[in-house]
Length: 110
Length: 113
Image (cartoon, rainbow over all chains, first blue to last red; front, top):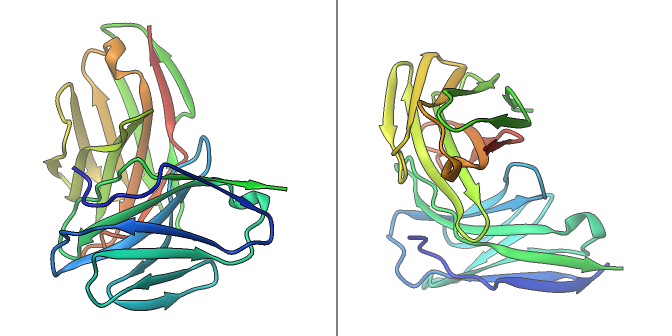
């Protein structure tokens, strides 16, 4: 079973910042939080990964509070091309397995 | 950029046929994975391999087998295809110790009639 819970869907207008929250109350101390993006008819694509506090790359930011019971993926100024399913995963660094949940379907509206 | 390619984007097979799905990666990754993706069920791990000739069962290995004779190539085999194996099959590769970052191929949509 997936260790994470996230909203099924979200809508946003173009140009807005989108925050997708993921709950993970019982992750292990060695679990990392990872986010993937998947467009229709394509494989998932790694976006960002973090353990604690804030991580930022050219695509997104990831905020993980000290208690690590939740995390937030932030997408700045979304465009129509950001319409996709976003998956939040928790996995141990030494584990081979990624467990994908149902993800959040983000729809960006013009 | 890492490139993971899969032998077919679309495949139609008959019940009982033996089906081979092939995956090739060009980044010298030790780890390779096979998933299937179904609506409402998300991605589920079928098998993975952490080295040539090594394999481990994932969550749903029944009805499937795998082969890894070369580091860059990981094959998924359906010994006798059934209609409940109609699905999108995704291959991925990754680096040991960084399993959270996997690189996926474009997928093969298999239909078994």
